[in-house]
Image (cartoon, rainbow, N blue to C red; front, side, top):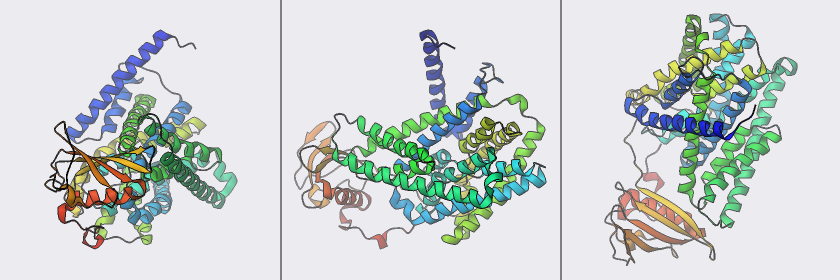
Length: 505
């Protein structure tokens, strides 16, 4: 098949229109309280064989490959935008949910699918493995918009970032029939090896990449986001080449890179968010194209509803309860974590693995998972704010009052910080001298309403001001910490901060 310039023009036009429609769907979904992924899936179904456009797309292997690429991008964005300081207190629970919790969920759903739906054990276990992981895109986008304690968001983000790896391995092993050849013990060993090896490769790439990025001065600021994302994908590719988990590697690498002192961190995170949105849009539209609506009948809907009930009301709460042994939490917190196990693209992408391997009954599994994801996304996502309020775990929102962007100074070991004082910042009314920055750091310029001011110690800062701060590279973290303390607490903020006075999350 040839692909000429005219076809390319048509492809670009259709792709641009679909992408713009999907971007507008984000705004519409926010207004009506529905998850945007449903709009993306609906666009894909409209474009597909069951819709008015009738585009034929049934290449499961291509969908499998593109789905994995999109998930890798989404995980990279999640790692780059996650604050390790907020996640660290809950990382034990998150890791337990991503491993022990997944195992419990797979077992419970498999038993339910076998005895309630009459599926053979192989398909029942396959369905359990496909349905068990939470979706990183859904968790990162939904939970970060809710005013929740860091102990909850940290655990859920860690789980969604790490649980793709074991389930991908498990679904792949089941789909290829390797479980019967290897046995349960060897299969468990393979999963553990891939997780640990992938994590180590990701950590090595993240640390090495951060070291390199701090020591090179690229000719354009736009190259830094590309370089950081390529470093994360280097971890993915290297880990996959070693037969380890690429998903674990890319998330760990991105987490390290995102929490390192790198130039242009704000621009890098914004770029990663934009690329992740594009990946998410393309992923859901493609999965909608892959669906054959003609196969969806009443039996499929009933099977999807039963699977979702078992997963939501039995498997998820039990997996959370067992996982919490490593880090006990109160019953209200555990109840919210149970309800917040958001499913999205990940189960549908995993369902393409048996399709691409030609497993008997794979079409049935794909249809069940697709319907289940749509129905229970409609149910659980919009109810999260209400559930949080009813359980008493919601708290007052903490808007960001300060944005900090950094760029390296080539000839000296120093960084240039651009600080924007937002409308919620308590830095308003503070004099420059009252910032008490570390020795060697100084406010060089204040940009106010387009005018450039050279500040004195008595210059009073205002909302909307942009500050240009020069700091020695070794003091950059201390300088940023001090700026954030003043932004949060005003001129009376302590020099080093007092953790005991902060809210325990």
